Image (tube, rainbow, N blue to C red; front, side, top):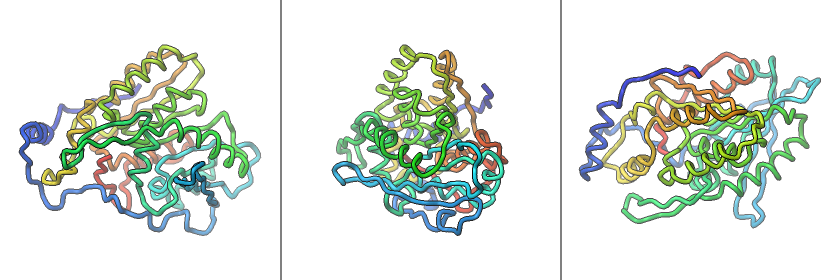
Length: 339
């Protein structure tokens, strides 16, 4: 597997760890970038007239009508002579912001995959409470910024059922897809969901793309147990896993963080549940699993937030042969997402 080795932990990481361990908060510049939980999607290709792709939308209600998933479906406008490959993308609202008409034109002129953006029925770029529930296979309890224990997560099994029993059948009803060429991409907690889906449903997709997976969730212990069971019982059904990680993530460089913000400090403590290079180490272990093809790709100089658009662009290039735009900055820089 191709790998790029990078330098040891950055000095900032050492300072931050010492500050957190001692309880001393380090002041950082006011311009420190933090994820805005209220950032909205804005205008995307989903709102533009059909060119190489047309888009349609459907909404899936949970059985108790308490939750709603918004699915945007991108179908090439050129009639297909054969069933198309399909890419399912988590954090669908944020994923839609990565695309432009040039990318869509290039996709449509080549393998022309069907694009499935699985998001939430609102205009938030990232719906943190919803994705925290849906993308995690077990409940995690951790202290919040006030030192109060909070429990969250554990809904991945239910969400998997929604994808398999509700979303996939609706996609197949609306367009022709090749069920032998189904891929699932996710970033951060979405990357964690991709892994748990591989471990529990290795035949649901043929290609699993896990970008910057949040292996720190619940201190990593349940994920390790799930991995061990997968390795022990895997039947050898051919599947491919691609793990992606930013170079700054692997070095432990979290970027400029406002350590006067209690929420940021609480989160930095929480993500200490896994080493920064945990995804790299995971790729090493899973590479020995017979029947599973594992690729690892590292993006020098990128942190957690910028890895969302970079990993998705790299996925489109690797799967469907378009130009690799992963090193092209987004029009709106991705924040240092802290989830």
